Image 1 (tube, rainbow, N blue to C red):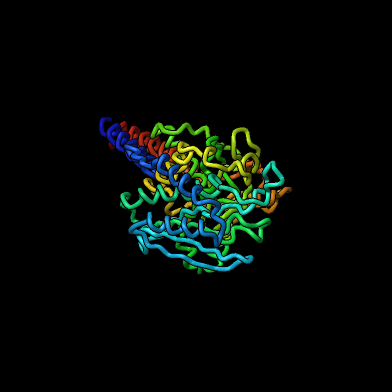
Image 2 (image 1 turned 90 degrees about the vertical axis):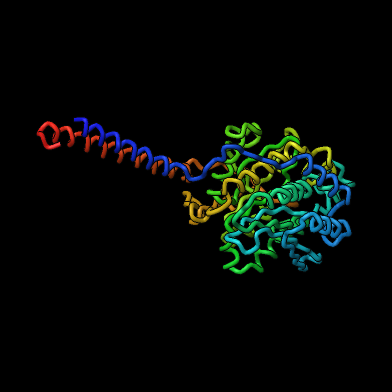
Length: 397
């Protein structure tokens, strides 16, 4: 009988080990070690707005590009210039670990809106805006992240993509021009090597309120949600209440050309700029988009998400784990923007979306797999125990 019990305990240990292996996809670091500095990022916002409106082709736009390049010592820097809608646009790329493994790309637009079309003062609607949040905040997050990346010992390529001409249009065909030009000149092989495209836009709002956006890659959003929870619960930083885990916003932004190229892409954006603001309301595209509306704390909150994701490898192997959702594209992309009953023009287009209760997430798949493993283990353990007891009673054990 003692032999039967020993075998039983051994089987239980093996089952427990199998379940742990099945559950642990990403290892959470013992110490979070997050170093993103929101104050330094906020200093960048001050510098950028001090240059004046960064309209494509302007002196301020050129000065900002030169400043970005000077702050990225050791990075591989390239620029691409193209002409669109009567403008000369320049995209800027900075790459670390060039040629090493697949690419994780972080993007932000550095241009600012050429007109304050949503301003309460109609006589000033033709004037350009400061773009402290809508423009400077995303650039500031990428630059502070760039300060940290060289010390992370990453084994894959990281590219920071500063897009031009995102905010100059009035409809789908006349904005996100820089991102469109990049995607149009990207070979399919180059696109397939990009594992994740994470856009940050309007992330400095002192009343930060984020939610998932569509179109967007389901697996990337699942991982982003888990990162936000971990930063709150594991790292004990940043109360996760700033993120709405239940709702989507439909948005047309610089991530869409990447999405249309088949690249896993998401847009981290606060579409409600200012306390109590409605969707694409508040200070958005007004002369109130000034430095006093931007918070170092909000910049740090978003910076932590990107840094933590790099630390645990959350932005890698996204394509391998992307799964389908009901009523979505076969590549696991939420793609509901074209079905929006209303489009809000003059900049990032968008609409409000309800999250589908039928969506199958990777977390659900993991739980299902774990449940099946548990049932199989229970059946095997009890079947073996019953046989061993029977054999022992017969004198065969």
